[in-house]
Length: 236
Image 1 (cartoon, one colour):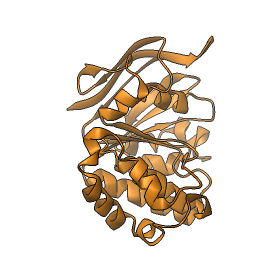
Image 2 (tube, one colour; image 1 turned 120 degrees about the vertical axis):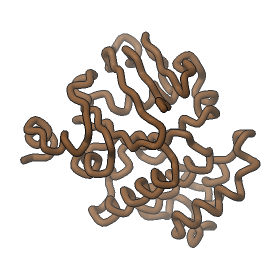
Image 3 (cartoon, helix red, strand yellow; image 1 turned 90 degrees about the horizontal axis):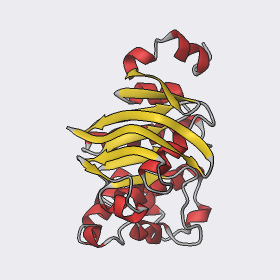
Image 4 (spheres, helix red, strand yellow; image 1 turned 30 degrees about the vertical axis):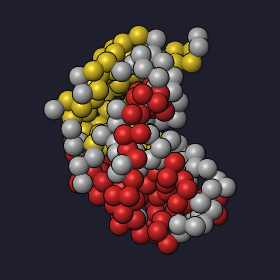
């Protein structure tokens, strides 16, 4: 089933157009990667889908319903949940308080305790750090908290913006394992990531953004062997 479908999407900031006629689909249960260099439009795409910026034209269909005209909080209420680049935690609140903020929407309050138990089982470090202020966590722990907070919102699709940014290679591996576990539990994942090799290995399909357009798309297992991908993104 097509969970997310984007048709001829144009978007940007004021007079500066970033995305040009973007079309893509994400099926229920998939991990789909969006890769590309800095400035390619990856974050702009994610912000447009989540309603943080509004499209100039084109349509975004979620479970068959047009959502590009909706405000961000209504898009989130439908189950499109973003983990932003840089995590955007509440630094002077505890781990537990940050998680609770993820369950303030009316429709998810009833599953708050169940979701907390799931997150603490998935990310036991967060349970250990429950009363610790978020700003004192390590980079890896902060990323886990950002993911945990997003899971509190019962996402139908979890959009992750550069989850490996600034992490050590060991922690990058841990974060990607967490993403894979979340996917296996049934959550659809859209992964925006500069670590192209990791993204291609984890995802089923990949879209390559270059200068605001989709330059390539296909099965990740095939793209990883493509000469252009190897040269431009893998340094091979």
